[in-house]
Length: 236
Image (tube, rainbow, N blue to C red; front, side, top):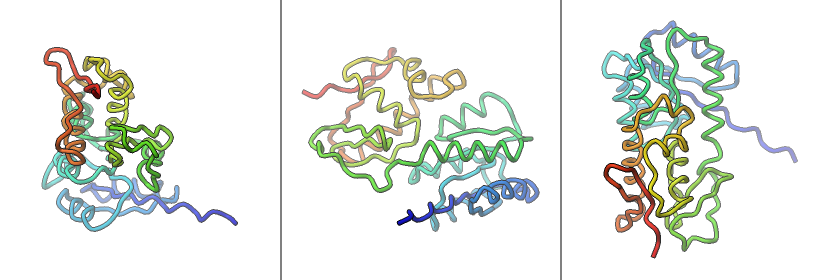
């Protein structure tokens, strides 16, 4: 029996210029995606609250709020991948975008086909996460890493982690007790560590702690070593 076809990826395009939105939609729909467009951050947040999307293409310069602010609000309750669009190429824009949880960053003007390829690459990286996850038998362990599915279990509960969060936590889990500098964590967890800044690590650690705390408020396994970096507390 043939397997049922995979569902078409649903992409939300948040762009206030209709011509640019049309330019993005055409190659994505040609690649088999379903797309929706909206022109403000408020409308984007409302749509994401009401429907499921596989990825958001998010313009930084929106009329009601910045794309960065939209992403900050989105990250409170969603781990949906975000690809930023911006008219500026300043490094600080890129750093801020990655720091608050962006998955990729494209500068205008851009090639629609290249943008489509970047979106497909992000979708490939994030798929195979927590969907249809089978909990490992060793649920008594504090952490269980399922590398094939890119899932980490904390006290038997699967964590909903973005790509960088998964790599960061996996690095700490691999060597409990070892103190990693921020530079070492960037090398291990970021695809382009030179494009990041050390404060980006602090932001991701803060997000990880919040997700761990949501599962077990009485267990804080990540230790801060001021002036050095971070480690995973060894189990006694």
